[in-house]
Image 1 (cartoon, helix red, strand yellow):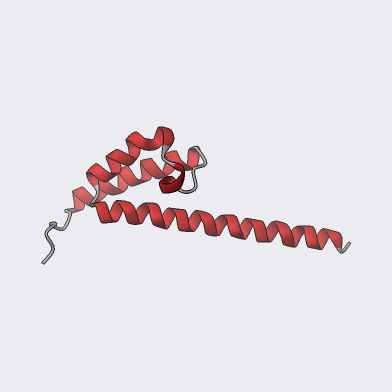
Image 2 (cartoon, helix red, strand yellow):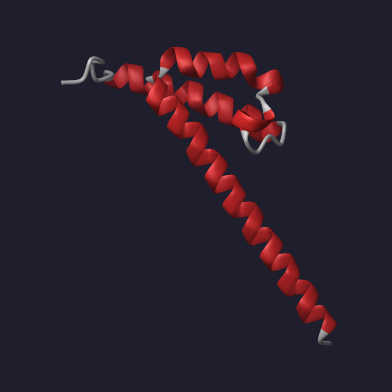
Length: 90
């Protein structure tokens, strides 16, 4: 059995709210990888997320966001290369 109780609906809603606040701050400050780059002015929001979410959830939220942001950046880079290649063929 798990040592940690399953969060109630209200606890999950609070967790997700704190996650959303933290992620919005990272987006606003163009921080891709909060673990490597640090959270900067978003650190108080990161702490609130960890206070209100199970640690495994908070870590997963950060890892998932980092992965998605990197994928977005790769797609943008590929699209840019394709655009330049297409322009060069004209």
